[in-house]
Length: 150
Picture 1 (tube, rainbow, N blue to C red):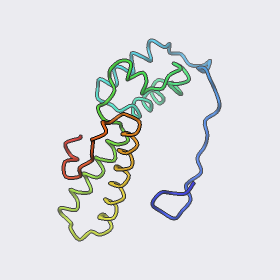
Picture 2: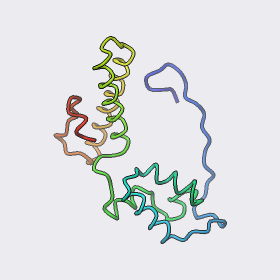
Picture 3: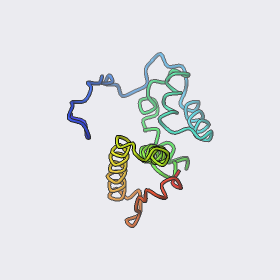
Picture 4: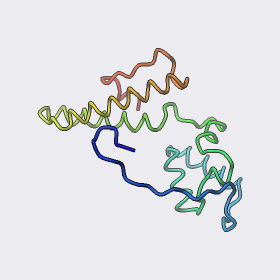
């Protein structure tokens, strides 16, 4: 698949092996995993980071394989879901940093274009979330107030 804002093809990626259940060599039970997920989320970590910590420190290859549900669904059930989706939060944080840079360096045309591309991604994502019902229909991304979302 081609890149969104470039004329190049994307990098090839590896695929995970097909598996429905937890591997035999895993030593942690479901209760321990649920407890760790809740504990890490209460520390303020995003779900992607929780998955990386579970994989690297506790040897849990995939939460979905072990528990049968995705990590985001587990967080929703425990009422620990973040107010805004993680992908949108990361893009808004990036846009805020670029705006701060452009205030100090107003002639930086490369980053002006980068800001346009990031904000177009944000608008597309907001449109998607409004269609899915995550945001109310009147929600609108305002670049000057983007720092307040964080």
